[in-house]
Length: 238
Image (tube, rainbow, N blue to C red; front, side, top):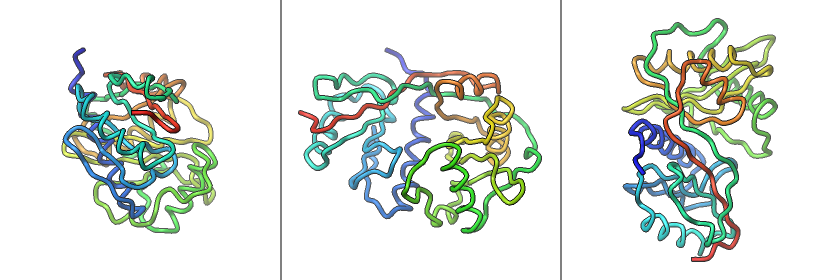
């Protein structure tokens, strides 16, 4: 099965985001030619292994076998829906689509800005947690503010963030992730996308979405370029 080059670009960008997150948490990892592989337990909402090159089933199975020998639960991002892991005990947690938007010339949306300090990042994360992804663990350490390839963006109102997203920059594109809004709509999603495009300059915008967020993305000028799924197994067998 052929894989759209744009999906591979998006998957490589996603692996770059994983590197930033693991490094900020002081977690070990290796980047193989085909996948990002965490050597320590992954933070919430992150996989132990995320694939970014197609047609590498044998090599990926070897990596997963090593992870299964060390961790009770293993999560893998099957970026091109190519892995046959059901016999090993893996089950799908969710499926989504890689999304792509060609470069657009936009201004920074009204009220949006880059988060520049630790206090602002804590406020941003508090809003992200309330409106998107609840967790008791600090997800975005201040160290991420020191990276030139990661930008936290948000819209402030009355001393809080009502909207936000993360842009992670790579040589090939800009990744859009962790989009949240108090009242999610297509217009709010498009504002987040435009903020990420603004910091990314003349680069394409990538990410992955499903459900209502996918519909918002398509209305905001994105197109789907491939399918992915996230699989998990407890006591995987290899």
